[in-house]
Length: 109
Image (cartoon, rainbow, N blue to C red; front, top):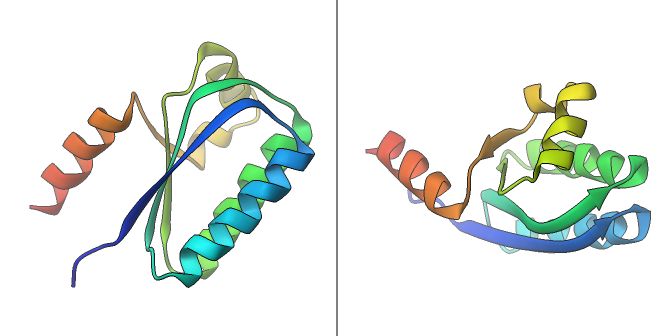
């Protein structure tokens, strides 16, 4: 059985409003049979506490659906926030989409 992978590209500030949109989008994607989600944060310039909470909530939704969630292209501010809140232990991050594809598909072979 092959995996169905979907990439979500976020931009701007990840706050409560965008976080709610993200959760709805993830729920729809999972309902469509996707089992691997990659959140590309290349264009995200700031995450507040509500945005961080929405990422954690998204991770729980994905895990409950027996799917996997990965993150890529985090900037220094987001990386520091992940480290300070220990979210770097929850989210497996990749340098960018190419790095994800290289590591993920190499590991699958």
